[in-house]
Length: 471
Image (cartoon, helix red, strand yellow):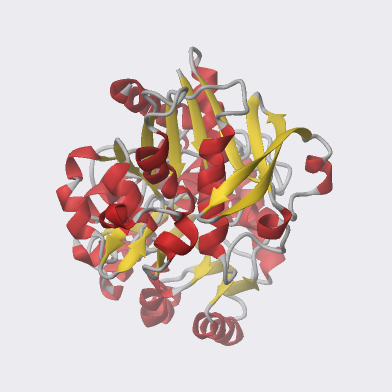
């Protein structure tokens, strides 16, 4: 089976978040399963590193209809880790600093979605499935349904749409239908939602299957609390909705070979983890010692649950914890953690910004990892933490609920709490501290953490099953 994976970002070429990790790992895992070929199509951004561009070869070019105008599209191709990438070039749309956040994002990704379908005329790869991701490629199943389904060479292509974060839907004014999309008014109902054009709604309407990045998130987005307004259409289309948990790259996150950490370690020889802990405390300017260390690596935004952390932070300090914190975002949280660092210089380490190598040292050196999110479609940090023998403390939502089971039960690999409540989170931290003081039980929990399998192989098998079912 041939799958064309459509994404606005993918490692190693361009990344702004978790979507790039998925698009850079899942196609490779699908190909490694054998019997299938998955290729990736993405924009040819100006910000792609020169050494990566040097490995791209020009393939062809063609024109793409954007309503009443035609726009140039060049096609570059590259092979990375056995995966063929098609990179679609238009300097006006994509030769900019950054991936998103421009006044014409709607037009840029209308062009990209239409270009993906036009591309099939010009490459020697006929996909059985177009696998699309988030609002930036949500128009691919819409355009296929309206314009391409009955064209020669396009017969019997199935479309899958994956929601990575339902908060970003691609909502714009209705004038886009004719001004930019070139979609006739009699098809307006496909995209119309609450008085706007909604790209994601159009994909939910027209795709053969809709997936999310965890089973629990697939259920949560049927609830108005999580759906950002899309629950009505999702409830109507839930017969085509399912959720598969993402994975992580076990080569990138491997404590046995990771060059970014102070000393390598493994499930069989954990001694290096203690070295990583003391080196982390030293790097973060925290007093040395054996007290438990909680790691936090996150964007400083409210939906990551930082209001809960603010409310009981000093209570957690009084339990005897130390902190290693890395992140940036809203000023209210940056100021709060800066103040805590000032008040408790021996117990709180803080680095504002994002330093990938430091994040790995926090995963490796911390004892626990705190993720009290309001919502978390999948979450990768809790999986990475387990890979490094660090025990997650999480709220039971989305992928956190699917991947972390409380240590109070059989097969537990972390500590969980249900309600979005600061004292429930504090209780989870208290239980974690109690178990930490019992070094035999704690060692058993850490050993169990190392046994967890969150490889892409498992996710790839689920997606292959889905693609096979619809085809």
